[in-house]
Length: 45
Image (cartoon, rainbow, N blue to C red; front, side):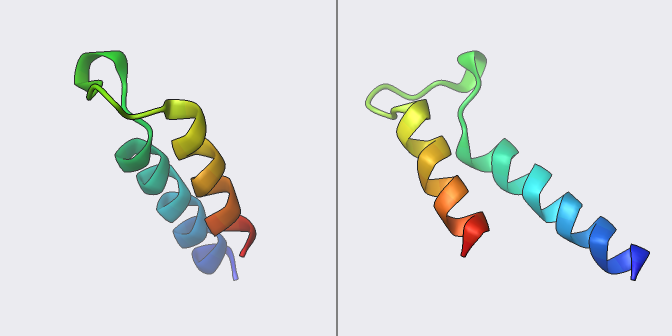
């Protein structure tokens, strides 16, 4: 059970890191607030 929870946690961290651009990798035209909102909706199911 702990292994499954850890995998879920790792997936969320990966999704955050690949969805929300950092300042050093910011792409013009991407709204971080919108990206975060979309990720939240995906996680909630």
